[in-house]
Image (cartoon, rainbow, N blue to C red; front, top):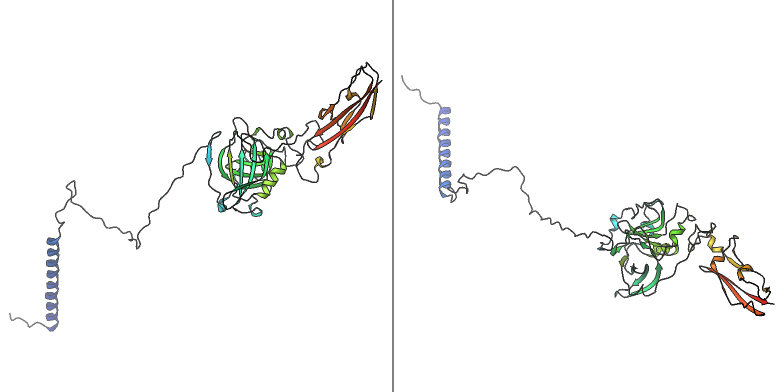
Length: 363
């Protein structure tokens, strides 16, 4: 059979196949050369198992990753008189934490919006040895000037007040307590620990726990620092959020201003016993409370008879209550010797005072 001459199309296909084959051959030769030149071509893992690499589909980061270091701050458990240091409060993270007695604000939540924001210049020291609070102004050099001292109550036995350095962080005009009572002008400084007034039976400013009030100046609370209303209110409005509080024991001195006295509420006088004597409210009955010593100016007795000035003198308050338990007499009378004798009687309760002098004639 005679060969048929190849067509033009067949010649093109043959030529393309020869070229493709040459390209493939050249590629194989190049791969072999690279393999021979690979210095790690015989390297195996320690367990003599040939190493393998896996292909990750994760996108490679385009920037070097940053290292995040987490630091943990050591916290000291507060038990009785354990010293604790609290960090200054974060103004953006100031929540309504409950007070030491489960407190919560019952007057519209926190009052930070109406309260001065953190500023330097104030320090509150609480000396638990004397139940005394001293407030200082602090200048840029750190020099302290005492501006007010307050009598307080601290935590009773088993409920001791925490010691250390803290910062004012929560403000409540009324604060509910765990035992069902209420505190006024409450300022939190560490967890549930707060400054606040002596507690009330209800949210009524004429319903104070008068027996607890009379414990001012000694241990009484569940750990909070109790104050009279006047001091609690002053602290509430005068101190900025974030002011530093130092609580400690120091037997050497109550503080540079000494320890102020505190008022007393007579439990037997129903008309005034529900009110804090220092409460500046216009309706406070202590504002008009009075005690009067009365009786005849001249008292005549027979020589040899028995005599007691209290048989001739009346000591009553403006509600008619007998207040002779709050009165004292001064002066001696010799009932066996005729003559004139002077006897004085004075009555005092807190700042309320009255006095009268009587002439006793022994006939």
